[in-house]
Image 1 (cartoon, rainbow, N blue to C red):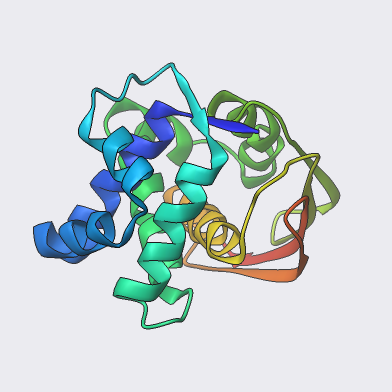
Image 2 (image 1 turned 30 degrees about the vertical axis):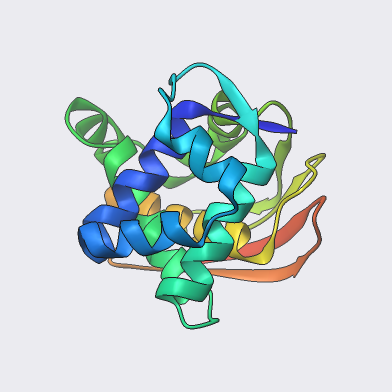
Length: 182
């Protein structure tokens, strides 16, 4: 499985936004040499990179910035969503209904990843239960980051509160619930 350079670039920008230049430096220093070398080169937005790169970055976030907890990954994911939805996109999202935004999660996921499916078993105006499946190489910190993204996207839609909870996960899929108040 692979992820696009645009996702990696947003992730790095979010690390710097949340944890400063020093936080980004610490994350990069914690990466294996082959991943550091990839980041030092030109990262093309539309080119695919191994999912192992994203996994290594997220693990470094957990260890270097989260002291072993995934809360730092969640915050970075939230900031990455803000980066992705800045400008005119923020205005569009603000006027969309929650269900419509979440229904588009599958196509959005596929814009960043070489494969994977987002499906919903429940989708109302205040609650959703979903699964991301048909992926490989995903880790707990990556899933935590995705939950931060979902919470932020719901907030950009106008939710006063939004909580994303992982129900179960593996390297191949994640079941989760979203609850929000309009």
